Image 1 (cartoon, rainbow, N blue to C red):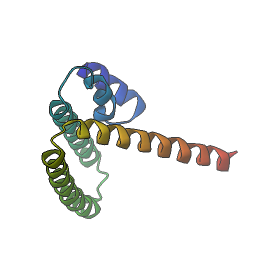
Image 2: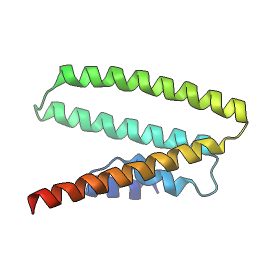
Image 3: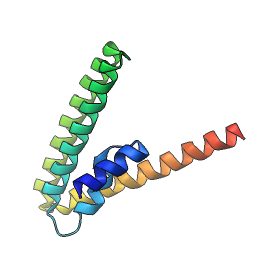
Image 4: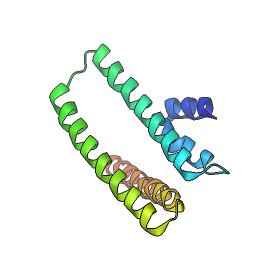
Length: 121
């Protein structure tokens, strides 16, 4: 499953986490799914950053600023998710949050792609 997600992610230029997440929703507890997807995204983004550095395409200052922002935002998201799961005692909130993020990103990617095609036409 991970190999298929990696191949499709490489072909389409997207992270493996967005591909493997729906596949893991079948019969696996949400915490394991979320953790596996997070590790996949971490590995994919680290390899992409290393590839850019090896090719000499450097924007280290911007990358450091974005890394700090992403780190703080991920800690904040983790705290909010843990508090929500503890308060409502439902791990399914993780599934719904991943589903919402996937749906919103799908709509945004489609919309911006359509706008670029319309402008180019």
